[in-house]
Image (cartoon, rainbow, N blue to C red; front, top):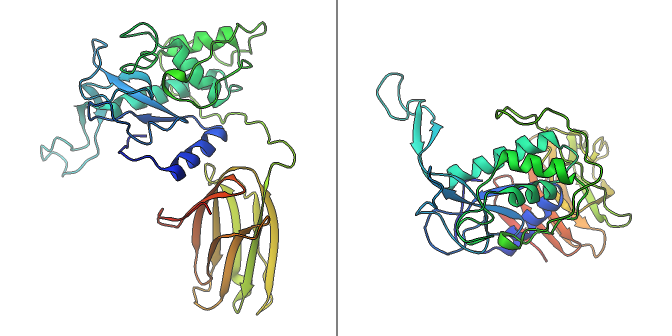
Length: 338
C-alpha cells in the first residue's frame, strides 16, 4: 500500500488484523518524513513496514525509522510507468511514459512483488510463513541484526526461496508483532514440500494463488440476523454476503424471492471473524418499499440498517462478538464497535 499518515486508529488496527488473520499478507510504505514518527497503516503490527534504500544500499534520507520498520527495499531513483495526462506527442513528462521516482512507496512494491513470487513456489505456505521467510532471509544492513533503519535488512527473493526450501511450510511462526519482534527461527523441516516450479533464476510473472487458510474451530463463528421488512415491490429485493477480498466469488449467504407485501423475513447466518461485503438490491428504485437491518444474534445489537428502494452496499468486519466495523458505499465509516 502506497499511503500513510499519522494517528493510530483502533478500528483500522482491528480491521487490518482481521484481514491478516484471514490469510492476507499486507505490505505498506514506512513513510517519507525522514523521522522516527510512526506512519500508518505501515506501523500496525499486522502490516510489513518497508523502508527505502538507494542503489548503494544506504538508507534513503527521507525514509522513516522506528521500531516498526520490518524490511527495506530499493526506493531511490526507481523507474516506473506514468499514466498519460496530456495529448500524445505534446512533450508532457507524464505522457504515458517512464520516469524515475523516489519514496518508500517505490520500495513497498519490491517487497510485495518478492512475496508474490516466492509464494507462487510455495502455495501451501500461509501469509505468516511468507512474512517470516522474507525477514529471516533479508540481507543484514546497518547495525548487526535488526535495527530501526533497515529492519531485518534488504529483501532477497533468492534468499526467501532458499529459506522455505530448507524449512518447509510447517514451522512455528510469530503472531503479528511488527518490526524487529517479528521473527522466530525454526529448525529445518525434515520433509520439505514439493517445489511447484524450478529454482528462481529470473523474475517472472507469478500466478496469483490463494493461501490455504485453516478453518476456524467449531463454535467460533459469529451469529448474525438479516431482517427484511417489505411494503411493496417485494419480488425485486435480493441480498448477498461475500468475502470482501473475493468480490467475484460465490456468496456465502444470500436471500431472495420475497413475494409478500407488508411482510417480515428473517434469516440467521454464522460468519467467522473477517471482513465481508453486504449487498442489497431493489430493482424498483422506488422509496418506501421497506427496510433492512443486520444485527448480532447474541444480544440483538444492530450494526447495519437502511431503507429499501435502490442498490446499496456495506462493508463490515468482525473481530469478536463485541467489535464490528461498518462502512457505507462510499467507504465512510458509519459504525465502529459498540
